[in-house]
Length: 221
Image 1: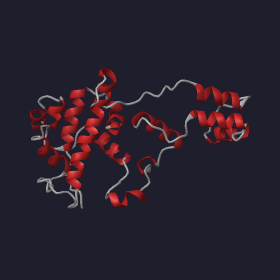
Image 2: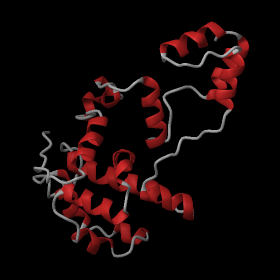
Image 3: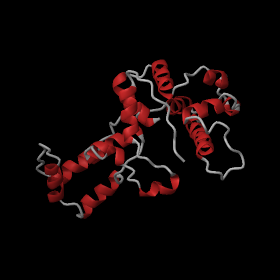
Image 4: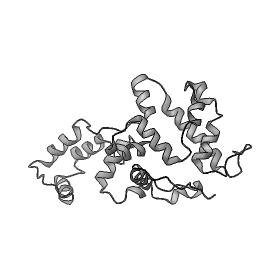
């Protein structure tokens, strides 16, 4: 199936939206996604920078747990020479007298990465709710309906529209979020802009997201 995209409306958020989209590898159609490098959109970044970014926006890591590296140090499978070579390759000005003790201090230091939260993340963290998994379920439900290739018994009636507009039509009559506790959901969806980029701009302005963090915030979404 070919995904039809509406012509994007230019705004001061357009560069951030474009950069966010470039970070996401094309994992469709689903039967072909296994052949795609999952880090394709980050391949222009140094490894450490990409790892740090994913830690902030995806709340995960592409590295082993720190305890694994500490165990390797103490067992000798990572040597002081390995650490010096890694620091040299990173063009680090650090030249520790005792590389093993220095690296142990780095690995045991508290994590200072400030994780980016979605609105649902923030609500769940601050109020003990479970909005984040509900949002994932809703997105999965409508994406599976939109991209369905005849497997389901019910076909979404708006598949002739671009994805955002199709979701908007469906969500305007979907009572499920209101049953879950998101009051007045359908009326609010009807009030959203018709363009996906306009809807993003509207949401970011309402949330008052600092401009310098918009790309990472959108990446988290």
